[in-house]
Amino acid sequence: MSKTTGFKASAALAAVLALAACQPEGPEPGTQPPASYDGVETRLLDDDLVNFRVQMTGVATRDELSAYARCAAAQYTLIRGFGFARHLRTNVYEEGGVWVADAVYTVSPALPRGLQTLDAEIVAADCAELGIPTV
Image 1 (cartoon, one colour):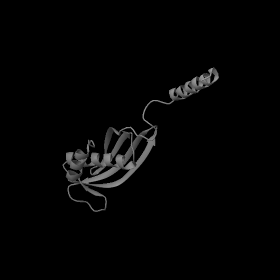
Image 2: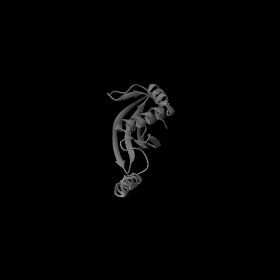
Image 3: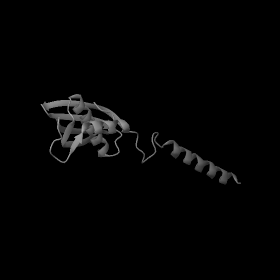
Image 4: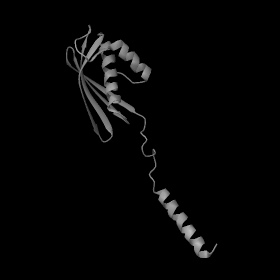
């Protein structure tokens, strides 16, 4: 190998190493850090109307955030001595990597009318099995 060839190979190797050093540390592109459940705020709006504000980071889908709100609603329903809840609405937004769901549910002792009802005992048990925290 000539001096010129050796120099070119060394320069090429140095350039590759310099580029490798510029790569950011952390997860590989396309990977998501694990979800973090960052808390629940509960506000009683009326005797049977409750607002849940849940916060997460590392959310892969909106469904994860909605499940967290549903789990909080189920446990809160049980704490209040009721057996059922009905989902009214959930607004989801993201700001700076922090996801928030603002959900409203009614709670009741009997199965309410409507399509989006939940049996609090069953949902709370599912949440525990899935490792989703509640109130």
